[in-house]
Length: 466
Ligand SMILES: *Cc1c(COP(=O)(O)O)cnc(C)c1O
Image (tube, rainbow, N blue to C red; front, side, top):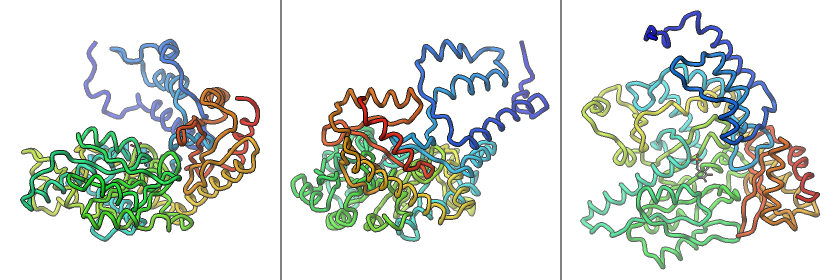
């Protein structure tokens, strides 16, 4: 059967019902507090319940929406549930979610200023707010990328490009191998980036809280040397424990050796907005590059990571793509102000920073400060609860919003059994982790609607056997 080829693109009455359904669904989802937690289902079950969804004639909007809402959505965990406390959850504001619908409907190519000026201008204001939280200088800038992993890779590629250019300019022989320096508590994406780049990782031992200090870095560099070192990766909020590296001490050592300091604040960087924790980030203003994920603790929908460079020109040198059809974007012209594609390893990009920008514009930065403070207060209260319970032991004083603790007497299988039960009974998403080689429990609190009572409810389920 042949159809009018424009029928999927010409808005007409046939789509009105679907528009109502889709917008109603989105609005209901935003309004539902708390949202359903939901849980994964085996592929065989989804096969059986949803069947073949891609067909020559199409299912039609009503049926496709029914499959989504009845079957598939139910098999996706709502990361904004107040008791979704594992990995790093997400708690987008209402304004940010609603504006994501606007971004989706606007067909914006946000790689170049020529095509996406208004979007990039707004994204840059949001990036500037992050840069100001860190105290980075006026010329700092970058772009939004998919996540901390993409941000770390793009920053490290820039750092290597700069190191290579410096070596070439000074007539030095290029090193046999390049390397990045990071602690074992650095995020797994740092090792993944090093793997993609085919560079080595030099490991720096941490203190008992999992913190990399300036002294430890100095000792490591003393031993390993600095030849071929592309960058030092500091973590401002380790994912597993919420520990902030000794940023000022690390910056001193980097200065001494003229090394690039990349600060990975994908999870923790948000706490620069909170007066109660800001001082712990002292030294962050000396970063050459910085990553903060608004989709983690700055209340933006997936996926958005802010990537900011002290000297954005270094990123342009490393990342600008050249091609005949793109040359127009790089000629001197009033339209060529800031091409977001020049600051990471991407080209086409969604204006993924816009929901975050809109939310900041709607609520104001004080609301962000207060919301981050609220999550920190909940984490501190949670740590007190853990300390007060006779069957649990706090493993680390929370520096940010991760509560790391042990259930006395439980082994790895106990944690797993209990964790599976929490999800099966739709109480919480609380998967186990490990600390110093021992199984442990971890609450990561980034949702202002998570209450101390939520934590109490979960802790109560740990009194009995797993
Ligand atoms: C989550 C996280 C990352 C990875 O970020 P994605 O957005 O998941 O790619 C990197 N570094 C740290 C410290 C993180 O917590």
